[in-house]
Length: 122
Ligand SMILES: [Zn+2]
Ligand SMILES: [Zn+2]
Image (tube, rainbow, N blue to C red):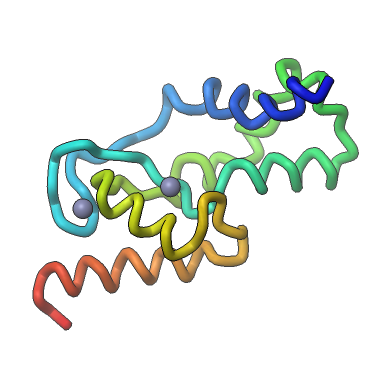
């Protein structure tokens, strides 16, 4: 069942993404092109933590993914940012591919600082 385990996060993303409220411009540079949706709380570590905290069997992910989404509305839909692809890649260069959950507020501050830099306020 190794394959299923790897797909657990994908199943959650597939189900959650139709409600993503993507903005119409990058929150840093205001570009309206090639926009990405960034989660300050990375979904992969969130899912793994939820499964292990609740001692769930990932084999049943299709049956339990709604529960995950319900319990993580804030992380999935609120603590997010719309970024152009360039700034999204930059953020992940700083914080890694799946940033640790403890870095969420640092990432938010990073976005704010980049926006201020971009607007010439620094
Ligand atoms: Zn940008
Ligand atoms: Zn991201």
